[in-house]
Image 1 (cartoon, rainbow, N blue to C red):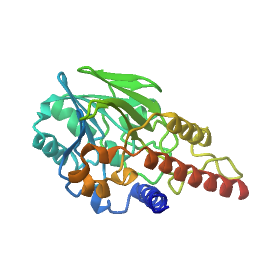
Image 2 (cartoon, rainbow, N blue to C red; image 1 turned 180 degrees about the horizontal axis):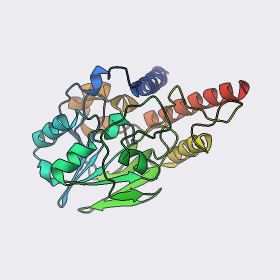
Image 3 (cartoon, rainbow, N blue to C red; image 1 turned 180 degrees about the vertical axis):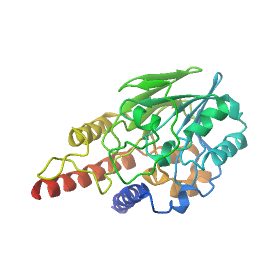
Length: 295
């Protein structure tokens, strides 16, 4: 019973912080978005190179490296320092992927692409947002950021392959229209295959409209259906290692305290993954019911 209570509380807090995280353009960024985090290996060729809460992941391969999320406009020096602390060359960054086209995950992309020559690959619907620097995002609660050229527009189910490692892009829309969850496999220290899931985003910002009503239009056509599809997609994905675009999604700081004792096993959390989905789906259903009742 105690474990179930801990998971529920963790999920509620994670979703609340993720929702509060995408702050309005005139609010200060949360301190954990810029606070330094010592980089670390998660499992196999997967490493964490983000801040205390804004997650960035490095996938190292013999033909260069993939960087998932470039975070704030101020984040590139921090991410570069983390990559180099792990012993990798910044110039070996070949592909830039992201979880979503909000400023807290892609504002640093233009700088990193310019410094490394890496190709930016972004899910359809979010690709044009990133190329316009977030200025035509459907939400008015997010900041603009430096625009960057998207070299490859991705679609649901597309593979991204480099140096023998293949990641699959899953369009899990709603939080942004092209919000992306990444899946791939890594070997465990014990020799088994571990399924990695990096959740792109599951929360609703305060200005999201899920349905049309007199005087209001939906944030974008099909947003409610996208959220419903996202929950179904996430539930169906095999998950051993549970990660996400924010550290609070997967209780990173608490798990780091257990890392010295448990090693890579600490990231294996399929129950926490399913609990996060359940809590997000409940929040969505409540918002939808409120908006339907107000029509």
